[in-house]
Amino acid sequence: MRLTYRITKSLYAVYALVSDRMIRQDKFFLRPSAFPERWRHTVAKSQLRPGLTLIATPIGNAGDITLRALDALRDADAIAAEDTRVARRLMDIHGVSLGGRPLIPYHDHNAASALPRLLELLRNGARVVFLSDAGTPMVADPGYRLAKTILAEGIPLEATPGPCAAIMALTLSGLPSDRFTFAGFPPNKREARRRFLQELAPLPTTLILYESPKRLAASLADMAEVFGPRDAAVARELTKMFEETRRGTLDALAVTYAEDGPPKGEIVVVVGPPASPEPAGEADIDDALRDALTTMTTKDAAKAVASDLGLPRKQVYERALALKSG
Ligand code: SAM
Figure 1 (cartoon, rainbow, N blue to C red):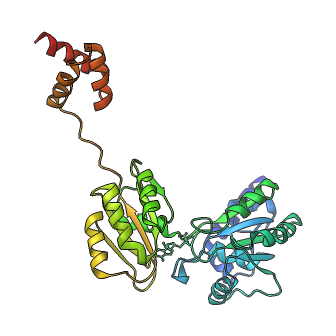
Figure 2 (cartoon, helix red, strand yellow):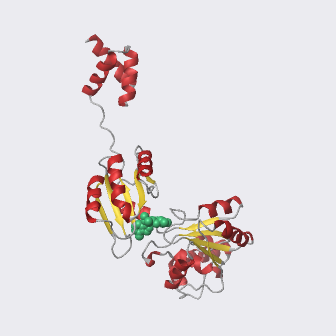
Figure 3 (cartoon, rainbow, N blue to C red):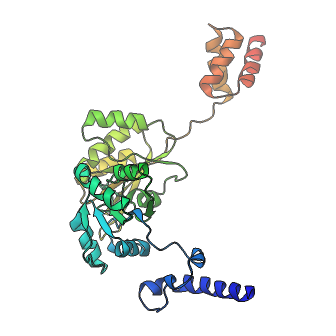
């Protein structure tokens, strides 16, 4: 009996994995729901649950929607969208009909009136999905206030992951990806933008910024001035017909875009991290020590120089003693 149970369970797991796509295309008459609940954990989580699900959508190429996102759109009791026309178009392309379900506009400017309606649905156990116009909700897009509010109410929050322009640009940039900072859109006005860039300058990470085409050249010129000659990439129209990625130093890219005029389409700028300073050589240590020893005790001079050059204090102290005795 136990063996039969195990064999049947294993067969089901294989069946469910292999047929995942086909089930969605209605080519199989048996759906996961036909199997006992306790076996379903063996397949990828596919069923939409009560609560809010944030859906990532394509950033240009409609083919980049995920199968889970389509399932969520099909199964939801209500759909909230930054722009309902954009959501309708995406659903039309993929043959997802709205039926009689509510399609609720939700964005930063109508949150006060839209939130109570969404909350009422969610408190009553509805499965609500939210999608922004493109890419991942909350990444320079609405969704944060909604997510924060429902979490505070103890309502479950889920997400179907997918496209994000920042991550795709990083992937294409050829720049270090072990540590990166997403900084959103720089301010439009030059002074505020330079202050914003100065705050980012010391971070030892790759930076990812969104920028509008008409401000790109000015923004790159400010970055070149504030960050210095770092490597960078400008990714444009990702996943679309005229997708391109230009790579080069910040100052060279600034000149290119100033000469060519504003490019068309949507832009992500990726900037490499600051170069790590060359380790100080013996001559640098001696010069700094000689200078410091003119006004400080040996101990204080060693302490100051070690801290300035980022070196172990003991090593610098021993060198200071050698200089004094020599
Ligand atoms: N939530 C989106 C995401 O996950 O990437 C970002 C939305 S934000 C309002 C729009 C900005 O994202 C654009 O101005 C541009 O900087 C960037 N972006 C979006 N789609 C893009 C694409 N296909 N190519 C390049 N940049 C894109």
